[in-house]
Each structure stands twice: as C-alpha cells, then as structure tokens.
Length: 263
Image 1 (cartoon, rainbow, N blue to C red):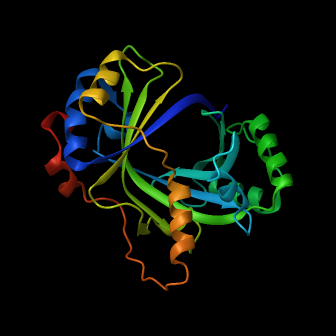
Image 2 (cartoon, rainbow, N blue to C red):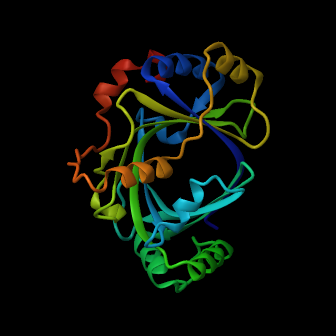
C-alpha cells in the first residue's frame, strides 16, 4: 500500500555557501546520505501547489495560525502522465507537521483534484488518504496556483533514525505552465549563495547537532518556500518583471565546492 505518514517537528535555517560546506563536514561524521543522493550530489523535487482562486490557503498560512493545511503534487524530477507521483496533504498544528500522502499517476492526480471524483481504486493508492483529500476538495474549489522546484541533498541520522536533515538550493518557481510534466524551469526564489537547511525530527535532536548549531551561531528562522514566493508575488505582480528561467543545478559546478567526502 502506497502511503507515507510523517509526524515531526521541523526547524529551518538559511545558510551561505561557506557555512553549508562546514556543516556538511560535520554531518558526514554522524549521518548517511539519502538513497537518492548516492549516485548524484543533488536530486530535483518538483511540486505543484493547489489553492483557491483568491489564494485562501496560503493567505491563512502566512498569518501563522495554530492550524494550517496545504495540498500539493510532488514528483522526483520531471514526470510524464503515466508516472507515479505523490498527492500530499500537509498540515501543521501548533508546530507539529503532519504529512499524509498517497501515490497516483500524474494523470489520475490531476483529474482527481480537478473534478473531486475519486479515481478507480488501484493497489498503489491508500484509500483512507484519498478520502481525506476528497473531503478537502469538497471544502475548497482548488486549482493549480504555483509550481515550485529545488535541488536537494539529504541525510538520515545514524543511531537516531527519526532525524533527517536536508539542504535545498536553486529554489525556483513559476505561475504559468502549471503542470509537473512541463519541465522544471522557474524564477529564482533566493540568492545563489543561499541554502535552506531543514532539520526534521519526531522528538529531540542529538547533542552533537545542538552543539554544532550553537558553536557556529546558526539560528532557526520562520521560512516557507510557498509563503515567501507569495509575498514576493504580491509585491511584484504589477511590475511586469522578466523571468530568468532556471533548471537543475549543473553538477559539475556544484561538486567543485563540496568536501571530498560529500561528493
């Protein structure tokens, strides 16, 4: 059964490249690479966020309520219509993140969200999650509103199985061509020298991680990729600003900056 359920706390940190490389040196001693990174330094995650015509979900989210929710499609790389992707509900209640997702083909997911009608049941779907999403679709008239992609390097804890640390770079967005199958082009969200580090854990973090953050003066920040893009969108939508299209990072450029053990 294709279901993944996550309940965890998340902390986010914005790093420059120099700090990022120093952090990797320490992480390599305590953590192991995500399976997607074992053959390539970075892998691309592409997302399509759904919202109402007047952006009700993201407007509520940036007000920092006790409860908020999002619906998105997620794929690794650029999928085609028959590829399996994930349809996810992401909720946050008093700081605890709950993510429930199920696999669908890209075509099934698009039709499901567009019509609100459950697809023919398949063995890779989780029907409970599908019904939860159907309920959400009954509460809101949701349409594709934002494409958001980034290149990720991720680690899992050794001896601390619930710990996950990821680094996202080359974050890019677009508000046109809202289909995961139409490539990973987008406008840069953050500066080229900025890395988003996310620390995810169900309970506590290990002592070595707390010590590293303290000694390197790395402090958490309230940062949302979608929320940051939405605020920028509101500020700039009247300017007719030209979009510079970014795609996946050139591995040959990125690996030259990494410690040898992180390549």
